Length: 175
Image (cartoon, rainbow, N blue to C red; front, top):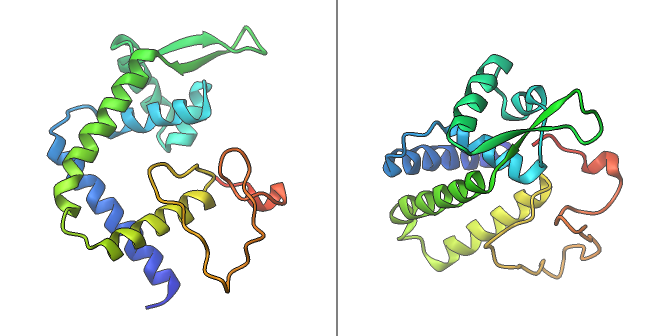
């Protein structure tokens, strides 16, 4: 198998586990709601069009979703801090609490599907999660801190988000 094959297999397996766990929770909220709340939590308040782009949905679709989420108290519209003519969408405390509850449900639903992984398999999952989350600018959470083998370069440093420090152009990613 090539590295490209390994990445594809990993992504497809994670996607399948995500679908399985989402179905197991029997939560009726659309996946786009959780994705949107996660984006607002991680990126702060966003213009509707920017939020649609980040979430990879149409602007009319995001408008409908935001309307539903606003009615449920999960998000709110605010004035843009630099331009009072523009509004931004922000997660509310209720929305962030709902997201935390969803992640807990999700972890609980996922647990039986991975309960029989060996310690070496968990170590591999942890290492992959850490390595890949760093590459996309995420700070790994809940993963063990692994020391690189002696033959790897220890010189990489990370910024306060956990992203590899270096040339900004090299570090820019689309999440």
